[in-house]
Image 1 (cartoon, helix red, strand yellow):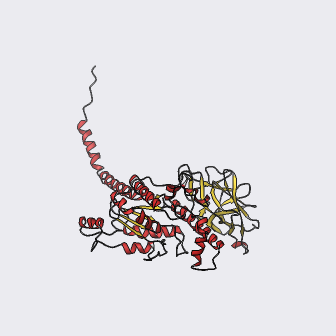
Image 2 (cartoon, rainbow, N blue to C red):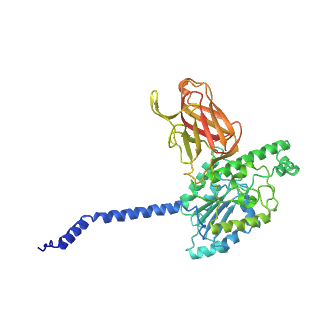
Amino acid sequence: MAVQKPKSRTGNSSSTKLTKFTFRWWMAIILIAVIAIIGVVVLQYSHASTADGPAPTGPIYWIGDSLSTGFLVSGNLKPKLEEAGYSPAYINANPGRSITQAGFSPGVNALNAVDADNKNICVGTTVPSIKTYCDAHNQIYNPVKDAKTIVLYIGTNPETDQTKSFTQLQQELLEKLRAINPNARYIWADIAAPGDLAKSTSQDALNFAHLGDPKITVQDLTNSFNAARARLLTNQIAIYSNSIKFKYSIFSQYNFFWHDKFPTVMQFPGITNQKDSQGFVADGTHYTPAGSDKLTSFIVNTLKTGNFAKSPASIIPVDTSQQLKVDLTNPPGFVIVSQTGVKNNGCEQQNGFKSNTNYRGCKVTNTTPIVLTPNPNFKANAQSFLFPSRQQKVCVGSISSNITLPIVITFARKGATVATVSAVYGTANSLAKIIACGTTDKPITEVDTITISTPVLSYLNSITFQTQ
């Protein structure tokens, strides 16, 4: 017997599908909204990622000190930039300038330079490149606002404002610039040389110093040199450690001049005197005409190729010019906190302590110390921290009522101790003994582990570092 086929339900099925589709009409609106949100995120990310690739051609704005003056006088910086498409090239150079220190005549620091240059300069201009731009843009050209690329060649001279770290001043200058021009490509130059001790303490240097004060001695010059070198080192570390956070690329004039002998740009801490065999460096800081010419060609090529510098992949620079605090129970992304017996990193936590129910800390003893190591997820292949080559003040935050012996912090690299700290509590009552501080017995440079141990059970919540 033939089996009767069921009647086709094509019509009903189509009707049902149509009904379902009509019922979900709101999905289209959601999809459009999602696409719009993604578009905004991508746009924001594209702005946040402007520290990669070649610098865009078009107007360039440049703030510099005496090094940039040398580039203009003997390095042909302006014509080289403009011939490469970075036109107009507006370069505000002032010897002796820093972010907060006014240079020589005219005495304008970097912050004030931005204010002075933030205006339309088309009226009455006779500079060919500026006149050409003005003619093509309705007689409007603001060097800061219209720049496609902004270069900061700042960091070698001391700051007048000693209440802020170089990192804080970097941020202040960049925020001022970005308030005017948020979309420009930002580039910061690193520091080329720590100076030449022999030239800084020579008879010529002493004779010059005596013009200001005849009582100055060679030892005074040596002390001044060492202080300046320490400052330059701190600034160098900051320039590299802040490049991602502040979203700028780096010109490595240091690597350009010294790559033949010192290929790793962050080896700056270990060098006392640069021995220039190429005739490029005049006095350990400034460049000869040949050096300026070579470096400006390198700068233009770097702008065009996008081959900017980065700190070595294995190193995480640590800027401790201002206090750096690490929460041991919720550490920042660049560091991993681990402890024996605790799986997947972290520490054995103490939540609440006596009347302080909000307290969170790590239970630490000599047999279960806390260990801090670089986080390879923060920076691929990260293997060590790089501190300025100076002693560090280290403080450990805790709540404890019976510790009289010091907390010991050990800095090590490849299993060998680099420096130690014996952190002791103050003399106040037990409830006030919540910070134990000490100074490293030696300067710290590169380390891969920081270990905190305590003589008796303690509850530690943080560790802070600051350059002495």
